[in-house]
Amino acid sequence: MAANADAKINRLNRIAGQVNGVAKMIEDDRYCMDILHQIQAIKSALAKVETQVLKDHAACCVAEAIASGDEAEQRQKFEELVELLEKRR
Image (cartoon, rainbow, N blue to C red):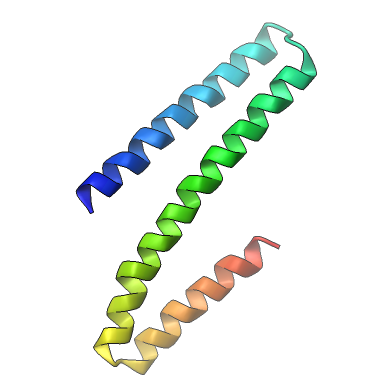
C-alpha cells in the first residue's frame, strides 16, 4: 500500500501546484477560458485520486469487513459507501 499511497500523494501535490497556477492565472487576469480549462483539468485529476481511494477502500476496508463475518461491520461499511454516493448527487 505504501507505493500506492506515494502515487496518490504525488498526484495530490501536482494538483496543488495546478491550483496555485490557477490562482496565479487569475491574479494575472488571464483569459477566462484558459482558467476554466485548467479548473476542469484539476477536477479530472482529483476525480482520479478519489476513484483510487474508493478502490482502495473497497479492496481493504470493505473486504476486511466481509472476511470478518461481522454483519454490523459489513452494514457500516456499506452505509458509508451509500452516504458518500448520496453526497455526490
